[in-house]
Image 1 (spheres, rainbow, N blue to C red):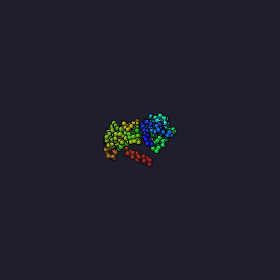
Image 2 (image 1 turned 180 degrees about the horizontal axis):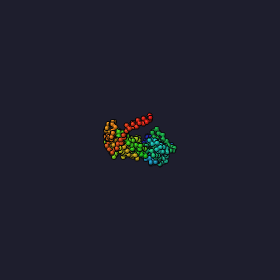
Image 3 (image 1 turned 90 degrees about the vertical axis):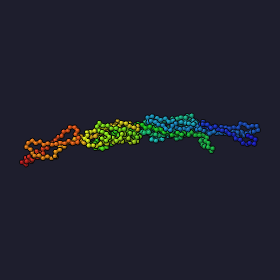
Image 4 (image 1 turned 135 degrees about the horizontal axis):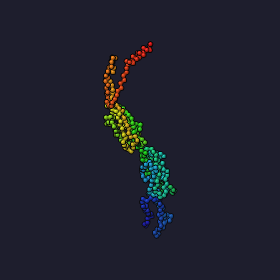
Length: 367
């Protein structure tokens, strides 16, 4: 101090670093004065507190924001990292939040508390995934860090008037929520096949349009399709004998029943039975084909392929009772189809003879 100076300032500079540190106490002491000066011993010491810095008790966060698992994995390990410092023991609370996946149905929630001992920086949380046989699309739930607490006594977390906080409490880090996605499983997109009740049937040529039911078994997740073709040994497609509408059948998300439309062409041609096969040959969107992949349609014979036989003569012919053999020509006509060889059976009723027999019976009765 200079002559006449009554006060002086001593500057102590705290060095800023990234090292997590608990609060520290320092003592600044006057140890001597030059000749002629004296000091008051009761005021020769100054106590200095450097507050805690850089999270000495840690910041707690998950190692990742999202995790995808299969249902068959059965157990999931989630890592919680303690960054910053690792002084003291810290208790952590976490909570499972159901989304489309339900606790107790799709997974077993972990214990609600976790203890980090001093100098412990990594912990794992174990979650059990429940494997079932239900077809399911992606389901999700979350695990949330809700609270952290420093264990022990003598900590002061109050904020002083100068804005300083003597002890810095542990904190929840940036990734406090992890989203767990259980991927689709057990044929979630479904199994596509014809309805077994409609794999074979017969229709008349004038039926018009047929709607063939196609079912989606088990899962109904997402939009899927199945390719469709037709084949026949005698029926001609593309508007001659029939029309297959479209080359695929589509199922929207959640849809379990769809239809394939086939139009039967009604013409005047005489035709025998004509078989048609509608086939499912491939699936897209994750779906698979089932067992019933062929639908057999039989168009019944139409327009009298063997023909219609009728007399060309008058429907009623009267002739006198001849005294000798008389030949009466009767002309038959075969119209419509002329396929194959046919035989006609002609039944002749002797109406006159029957009338005479009845009359003779009546005379005998009266006698």
